[in-house]
Image (cartoon, rainbow, N blue to C red; front, side):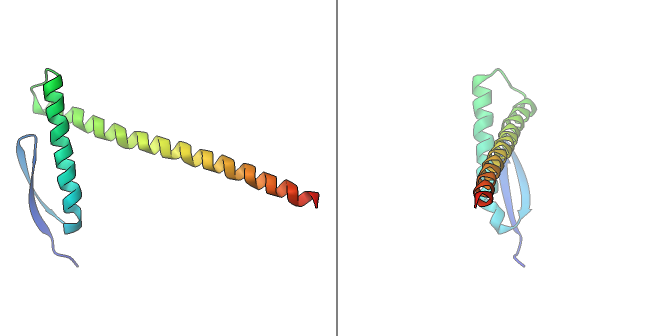
Length: 98
């Protein structure tokens, strides 16, 4: 069992101490950096001063990306299923001809 790692992440000018598995560190640091960059972008481009509003906008942005990927994966799966069914039907029709 791996030992836990204590790190501190800064997000929107606040420090969050976390105890994590070492394998999570890189992903968490990248995520915190992405949130910070997006928050700064929102603050620069919109007249938003409240950090809670900025963080809510960041959460919405990231969550919508996750949801969109799920929708796209479902559509891809449906297309693959449709093509496999067509291929199966084609093979079955060739088999019945013989």
